[in-house]
Amino acid sequence: MFRTKPILTVAATLCFTALTILTSTSRVHADDVPVVEITAKRFAFNPDKITLKKGQTVKLRLHSEDVTHGFFLRPLKLDEEIPAGETVDVTVTPQTAGTFTTICDHFCGANHGNMNMTIVVE
Amino acid sequence: MSATDRRRFLKIAGTSLGIGVLYSAYPLAHSQGEAGHVFSALGKSTGEKVTPFSFVQLSDAHVGFNGPPDPLGTKAFERAVDMINGLPQRPDLVLFTGDLTHDTEDRKVHVQRMKQFQEISRIINAPLIKCVPGEHDAGLDQGALYREFFGESYYSFDHRGVHFVALDNVSRPKPEVGAEQLAWLKKDLARFPKSAPIVVFTHRPLFDLRPDWEWFTSDGDDVMNVLSTYDNVTVLYGHIHRDDEHETGSVHHYGARSLIFGFPDPNANTGPRKAMPFDKDHPFKNLGIRTVSFNGKAEIGSKALSIEDIELTAREFRGINGVQQILRDPRV
Image (tube, rainbow over all chains, first blue to last red; front, side, top):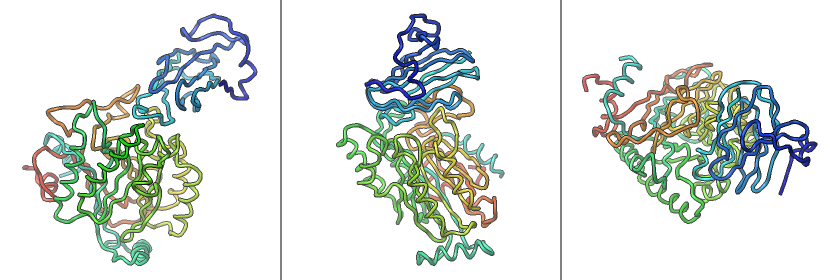
């Protein structure tokens, strides 16, 4: 099942150009917005660290392989729900450099409190 | 002996003993004017004589937790119960601020953990025990099993002139109270004047203590907008497994230590949250007790409860005499 937010549907179904400039799971979209794929599965995100560039817009493609997860990072104004088995796209343009911890804030089990990943903005 | 010196002394004293938080409330006895009338009215509404009383807060026992960093299971919880029962003057009330149990997807196992919590807490010599859930009690089933064992997850009651409010910020998937409970809170508090003494107990902090450690309530600002219209509100919470004190306007927030393991200072640690390591030589380190007394003032911005954090030694200080010995005798 594939779900996108209305604001993001414009680019959601286009093909991708395989230009990896951010991480091994990132691609550049036809509208030149790089896509970074992140998978959530209890109790970890994969990859567990990505690096973004300050001021550069990217699309985070969030996919849950099992239950519903959250994707929460207040400094980047990220507060997403990733329903079980679904994919959610969210576009972000980080304005502040730094190293940030992103957490799952949708309770998902005993080790939920340790489900996090790092986003570096440089 | 200043509070700072006392705290330093207590830390020097060595190994800590997990117990919780001991509170003393002295409403009416020292209150004048409107506040005195409020205490009196609240007491009359419950048919209880308004007299000084004490209560204990326990938090985060995580019954069923098994593995690093704490291999001791329920030992700190059981020891806390023994300590409470050793008090020469039994507390009127025990508040448990969530994570009574550790979660599991095996319902039968979680049932056993709830029962084990009840078996241990049933030994507490106190007439009233009140709980709120933590996310480990209620997060997986939106509080269904918790309610089977402990009743409603949010409610209020009056006790000797103090209004207690239990708030649930864990039964929804996200860390929030939710619109329905918020509406209930407004209605519950509407009958009270501004100066009413109110104690809120909940699991997660109602302010942004450390959002990237999930130490926040997403609609906490909405809750605080309700609470901040009252002059004498104290919020007691758990979840963070450590002491913490915070002020939001005239509202005072106090985080409690856990009965399982501690978390580090959020202001001294960047990056992800990690539990503090277990110290086999000091098995109850970072688990502790806090005494709190009503200071007799119920004025705008004053602290209705004054709180003293204590780190106990492993020595067998039994009952309140032991606590007072540690607190008041620097030669010990």
